[in-house]
Image 1 (cartoon, rainbow, N blue to C red):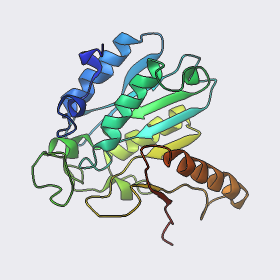
Image 2: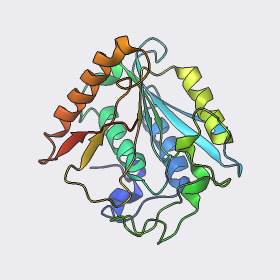
Image 3: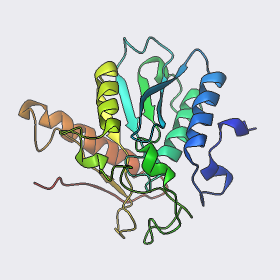
Image 4: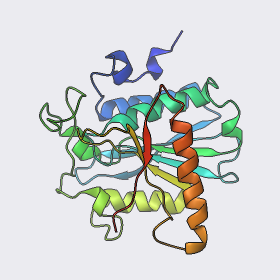
Length: 233
């Protein structure tokens, strides 16, 4: 039987709703309590409005001695799928109902809600073209900054905190989880990987291999149509 302290608002509502930042706080604490030897909950910064920015590091080995996979959700809070699915996936990995043993070989650094201030600007009409949830957060921060355009200039305190987290844990792969904002595409999964179009050209084959392998994996899930995403130049 599923422990309800570890389930998301999305699951409890039949995926009609998504939780607020109090859910992130509750679930981070609950995961650390349920798997104290494998999960550490941490606050890595504060938002412009002073909200705590939380992350989980999950590993059954020494996380400093294995590759780190970073999963970043909620850079655009209306796109809550990454946050909700991330908690579900991490719970299944920790419960070993999916990929048993994987957390002995890698560590997962999970940031459920990057833009915490935007996450709390909840409304029914923030994403009018998107099929759920019933209410969502807002795309930009309290300072009206789009964090997805702030990695290089780091104007936002949230981005400076994120860059500090990345420096601390030095992930081998970073996955930034987005949703289409209601656009209607035939493929339901889109993947963009770098380095493929920029950066060290010697790493391009590895970038393409990573992208194409994940695309092949995705097609096995309930007939999903997927397409590698071409980066705009």
